[in-house]
Length: 269
Image (cartoon, rainbow, N blue to C red; front, side, top):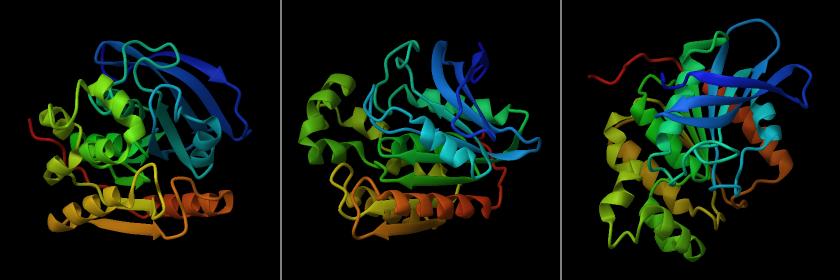
Protein backbone atom coordinates (compact mmCIF):
# COMPACT_ATOMS: atom_id res chain seq x y z
CA UNK A 1 0.00 0.00 0.00
CA UNK A 2 2.28 2.76 -1.27
CA UNK A 3 1.02 6.25 -0.42
CA UNK A 4 -0.59 7.95 -3.41
CA UNK A 5 -0.93 4.78 -5.49
CA UNK A 6 -4.06 4.89 -7.64
CA UNK A 7 -6.22 1.80 -7.04
CA UNK A 8 -9.14 2.68 -9.34
CA UNK A 9 -9.51 5.23 -12.13
CA UNK A 10 -12.97 5.72 -13.60
CA UNK A 11 -13.67 8.03 -16.55
CA UNK A 12 -16.10 10.80 -15.62
CA UNK A 13 -18.08 13.18 -17.88
CA UNK A 14 -16.06 16.34 -18.49
CA UNK A 15 -17.75 19.65 -19.33
CA UNK A 16 -14.65 20.65 -21.32
CA UNK A 17 -13.82 18.55 -24.41
CA UNK A 18 -10.11 19.41 -24.04
CA UNK A 19 -9.92 18.00 -20.48
CA UNK A 20 -10.14 14.37 -19.34
CA UNK A 21 -11.79 13.93 -15.95
CA UNK A 22 -11.51 10.87 -13.72
CA UNK A 23 -12.92 9.74 -10.40
CA UNK A 24 -10.02 8.01 -8.69
CA UNK A 25 -9.42 5.96 -5.55
CA UNK A 26 -5.95 6.11 -4.01
CA UNK A 27 -4.12 4.90 -0.91
CA UNK A 28 -3.66 7.21 2.07
CA UNK A 29 -2.32 5.68 5.29
CA UNK A 30 -3.98 2.35 4.52
CA UNK A 31 -7.32 3.94 3.61
CA UNK A 32 -9.02 4.09 0.23
CA UNK A 33 -9.68 7.78 -0.45
CA UNK A 34 -11.61 9.26 -3.39
CA UNK A 35 -10.91 12.34 -5.48
CA UNK A 36 -11.06 13.91 -8.94
CA UNK A 37 -8.16 13.97 -11.36
CA UNK A 38 -8.36 16.31 -14.35
CA UNK A 39 -5.76 16.46 -17.11
CA UNK A 40 -5.45 18.22 -20.48
CA UNK A 41 -5.97 15.78 -23.36
CA UNK A 42 -3.15 17.27 -25.42
CA UNK A 43 0.18 15.48 -25.07
CA UNK A 44 2.84 17.27 -23.07
CA UNK A 45 4.25 17.82 -19.60
CA UNK A 46 2.28 20.15 -17.34
CA UNK A 47 2.51 21.77 -13.93
CA UNK A 48 0.67 19.86 -11.22
CA UNK A 49 -2.10 21.54 -9.21
CA UNK A 50 -3.24 20.10 -5.87
CA UNK A 51 -6.70 21.49 -5.10
CA UNK A 52 -7.62 21.27 -1.42
CA UNK A 53 -11.29 21.89 -0.74
CA UNK A 54 -12.89 23.64 2.18
CA UNK A 55 -15.77 22.59 4.42
CA UNK A 56 -16.38 19.16 5.86
CA UNK A 57 -18.41 16.20 4.57
CA UNK A 58 -20.87 17.42 1.93
CA UNK A 59 -20.41 21.08 2.85
CA UNK A 60 -17.79 22.53 0.50
CA UNK A 61 -17.46 19.36 -1.58
CA UNK A 62 -15.24 19.57 -4.65
CA UNK A 63 -17.09 21.04 -7.63
CA UNK A 64 -16.27 19.68 -11.08
CA UNK A 65 -16.59 23.13 -12.65
CA UNK A 66 -13.89 24.49 -10.36
CA UNK A 67 -11.48 21.63 -11.13
CA UNK A 68 -12.02 22.02 -14.87
CA UNK A 69 -11.51 25.79 -14.54
CA UNK A 70 -8.00 25.25 -13.18
CA UNK A 71 -7.16 22.37 -15.55
CA UNK A 72 -8.15 24.63 -18.46
CA UNK A 73 -5.34 27.00 -17.42
CA UNK A 74 -2.83 24.26 -18.29
CA UNK A 75 -2.53 22.10 -15.17
CA UNK A 76 -3.02 18.48 -14.19
CA UNK A 77 -5.36 18.90 -11.21
CA UNK A 78 -5.77 16.49 -8.30
CA UNK A 79 -8.63 17.22 -5.88
CA UNK A 80 -9.04 14.83 -2.92
CA UNK A 81 -12.44 14.51 -1.23
CA UNK A 82 -10.68 13.54 2.05
CA UNK A 83 -11.32 10.33 3.94
CA UNK A 84 -14.87 9.20 4.63
CA UNK A 85 -16.41 11.10 1.72
CA UNK A 86 -18.17 9.79 -1.40
CA UNK A 87 -17.58 6.17 -0.36
CA UNK A 88 -14.01 6.57 0.86
CA UNK A 89 -12.72 4.86 4.01
CA UNK A 90 -12.37 6.50 7.43
CA UNK A 91 -13.62 9.84 8.78
CA UNK A 92 -12.25 13.31 8.14
CA UNK A 93 -11.14 15.21 11.22
CA UNK A 94 -10.60 18.80 10.06
CA UNK A 95 -6.86 19.07 9.38
CA UNK A 96 -6.06 16.19 11.72
CA UNK A 97 -5.12 12.82 10.27
CA UNK A 98 -6.99 13.68 7.08
CA UNK A 99 -3.97 15.88 6.23
CA UNK A 100 -2.38 12.64 5.00
CA UNK A 101 -5.02 12.48 2.27
CA UNK A 102 -3.59 15.75 0.92
CA UNK A 103 0.01 14.51 1.32
CA UNK A 104 -0.84 11.30 -0.59
CA UNK A 105 -2.68 13.30 -3.28
CA UNK A 106 0.55 15.25 -3.77
CA UNK A 107 2.22 11.87 -4.43
CA UNK A 108 -0.44 11.10 -7.06
CA UNK A 109 0.67 14.21 -8.96
CA UNK A 110 4.37 13.55 -8.36
CA UNK A 111 4.04 10.14 -10.05
CA UNK A 112 1.76 11.30 -12.89
CA UNK A 113 3.30 10.82 -16.34
CA UNK A 114 2.10 14.24 -17.54
CA UNK A 115 3.37 16.22 -14.51
CA UNK A 116 6.74 17.90 -14.05
CA UNK A 117 7.47 16.77 -10.45
CA UNK A 118 9.49 19.93 -9.73
CA UNK A 119 6.50 22.11 -10.63
CA UNK A 120 3.63 21.05 -8.38
CA UNK A 121 1.54 23.83 -6.83
CA UNK A 122 -0.87 23.59 -3.92
CA UNK A 123 -4.09 25.59 -3.61
CA UNK A 124 -6.34 25.70 -0.57
CA UNK A 125 -9.75 27.31 -0.24
CA UNK A 126 -11.28 28.05 3.19
CA UNK A 127 -10.49 25.08 5.50
CA UNK A 128 -8.29 23.90 2.60
CA UNK A 129 -5.92 26.75 3.46
CA UNK A 130 -4.77 24.88 6.55
CA UNK A 131 -4.45 21.68 4.51
CA UNK A 132 -2.38 23.49 1.86
CA UNK A 133 0.00 24.95 4.43
CA UNK A 134 0.44 21.60 6.18
CA UNK A 135 1.13 19.95 2.81
CA UNK A 136 3.74 22.55 1.82
CA UNK A 137 5.42 22.11 5.22
CA UNK A 138 5.48 18.34 4.68
CA UNK A 139 6.71 18.63 1.07
CA UNK A 140 9.17 21.57 0.87
CA UNK A 141 9.73 20.86 -2.84
CA UNK A 142 6.29 22.30 -3.68
CA UNK A 143 6.72 25.06 -6.26
CA UNK A 144 4.14 27.53 -4.89
CA UNK A 145 1.20 27.80 -2.51
CA UNK A 146 -2.02 29.80 -2.82
CA UNK A 147 -4.49 30.15 0.05
CA UNK A 148 -7.82 31.78 -0.88
CA UNK A 149 -10.13 32.74 1.99
CA UNK A 150 -7.99 30.29 3.90
CA UNK A 151 -7.99 29.26 7.54
CA UNK A 152 -4.58 29.57 9.20
CA UNK A 153 -5.47 29.24 12.91
CA UNK A 154 -7.95 26.61 14.16
CA UNK A 155 -8.32 28.23 17.59
CA UNK A 156 -9.30 31.48 15.90
CA UNK A 157 -11.91 29.58 13.86
CA UNK A 158 -13.37 28.21 17.11
CA UNK A 159 -13.55 31.71 18.63
CA UNK A 160 -15.04 33.38 15.57
CA UNK A 161 -17.50 30.76 14.33
CA UNK A 162 -20.19 30.03 16.92
CA UNK A 163 -21.98 27.90 14.35
CA UNK A 164 -18.96 25.59 13.96
CA UNK A 165 -18.15 25.04 17.63
CA UNK A 166 -20.31 21.97 18.02
CA UNK A 167 -18.72 20.33 14.96
CA UNK A 168 -15.19 21.28 16.05
CA UNK A 169 -15.74 19.87 19.56
CA UNK A 170 -17.11 16.66 18.06
CA UNK A 171 -14.34 16.21 15.49
CA UNK A 172 -11.38 17.45 17.56
CA UNK A 173 -12.66 16.17 20.91
CA UNK A 174 -13.17 19.40 22.81
CA UNK A 175 -12.43 23.12 23.01
CA UNK A 176 -9.09 24.94 22.47
CA UNK A 177 -9.05 25.63 26.22
CA UNK A 178 -9.39 21.95 27.11
CA UNK A 179 -7.17 20.56 24.34
CA UNK A 180 -4.84 23.37 23.20
CA UNK A 181 -2.32 20.87 21.78
CA UNK A 182 -4.94 19.39 19.41
CA UNK A 183 -5.72 22.82 17.97
CA UNK A 184 -2.04 23.76 17.83
CA UNK A 185 -1.29 20.57 15.86
CA UNK A 186 -3.87 21.69 13.30
CA UNK A 187 -2.45 25.25 13.12
CA UNK A 188 0.45 25.56 10.66
CA UNK A 189 1.46 29.03 11.96
CA UNK A 190 3.63 27.20 14.49
CA UNK A 191 5.57 25.27 11.84
CA UNK A 192 6.21 27.85 9.13
CA UNK A 193 9.97 27.61 9.67
CA UNK A 194 9.68 24.44 7.56
CA UNK A 195 7.92 26.26 4.70
CA UNK A 196 9.97 26.77 1.53
CA UNK A 197 7.33 27.53 -1.11
CA UNK A 198 6.44 31.13 -2.00
CA UNK A 199 2.94 31.97 -0.72
CA UNK A 200 0.11 33.98 -2.27
CA UNK A 201 -2.71 35.00 0.10
CA UNK A 202 -6.09 35.94 -1.41
CA UNK A 203 -8.80 37.16 0.95
CA UNK A 204 -11.98 39.22 0.93
CA UNK A 205 -11.94 41.79 3.72
CA UNK A 206 -15.69 41.31 4.33
CA UNK A 207 -15.31 37.54 4.74
CA UNK A 208 -17.52 36.32 7.60
CA UNK A 209 -16.76 32.61 7.08
CA UNK A 210 -13.00 32.98 7.53
CA UNK A 211 -12.10 36.41 8.86
CA UNK A 212 -9.33 38.51 7.32
CA UNK A 213 -7.44 38.00 10.59
CA UNK A 214 -6.43 34.53 9.37
CA UNK A 215 -4.72 36.15 6.38
CA UNK A 216 -3.10 38.87 8.49
CA UNK A 217 -1.69 36.35 10.97
CA UNK A 218 -0.30 34.18 8.20
CA UNK A 219 1.25 37.09 6.30
CA UNK A 220 2.81 38.52 9.47
CA UNK A 221 4.37 35.21 10.49
CA UNK A 222 5.78 34.47 7.03
CA UNK A 223 7.31 37.95 6.86
CA UNK A 224 8.81 37.57 10.34
CA UNK A 225 10.58 34.46 9.08
CA UNK A 226 11.91 36.30 6.03
CA UNK A 227 10.08 34.07 3.56
CA UNK A 228 8.36 34.99 0.30
CA UNK A 229 4.72 36.07 0.55
CA UNK A 230 2.37 38.19 -1.57
CA UNK A 231 -1.14 39.29 -0.55
CA UNK A 232 -4.16 40.25 -2.63
CA UNK A 233 -6.81 41.72 -0.35
CA UNK A 234 -10.24 42.65 -1.70
CA UNK A 235 -12.04 45.30 0.43
CA UNK A 236 -15.47 44.78 -1.19
CA UNK A 237 -15.76 40.99 -1.15
CA UNK A 238 -16.77 38.22 1.25
CA UNK A 239 -15.85 34.51 1.23
CA UNK A 240 -17.25 34.24 -2.29
CA UNK A 241 -16.28 36.56 -5.15
CA UNK A 242 -18.61 37.64 -7.98
CA UNK A 243 -18.20 35.36 -11.04
CA UNK A 244 -16.33 37.86 -13.21
CA UNK A 245 -13.92 38.74 -10.39
CA UNK A 246 -13.51 35.06 -9.60
CA UNK A 247 -12.54 34.26 -13.21
CA UNK A 248 -10.06 37.12 -13.38
CA UNK A 249 -8.53 36.16 -10.02
CA UNK A 250 -8.12 32.54 -11.20
CA UNK A 251 -6.36 33.79 -14.32
CA UNK A 252 -4.05 36.01 -12.27
CA UNK A 253 -3.22 33.43 -9.63
CA UNK A 254 -2.42 30.72 -12.21
CA UNK A 255 -0.12 33.17 -14.00
CA UNK A 256 1.52 33.90 -10.65
CA UNK A 257 2.04 30.16 -10.10
CA UNK A 258 3.59 29.65 -13.52
CA UNK A 259 6.18 32.37 -12.89
CA UNK A 260 7.47 30.77 -9.67
CA UNK A 261 10.82 29.02 -9.94
CA UNK A 262 11.01 25.40 -8.72
CA UNK A 263 13.13 24.57 -5.72
CA UNK A 264 14.18 21.07 -4.80
CA UNK A 265 14.86 21.23 -1.07
CA UNK A 266 13.43 18.13 0.62
CA UNK A 267 12.76 17.23 4.23
CA UNK A 268 15.81 15.78 5.92
CA UNK A 269 15.44 12.29 7.31
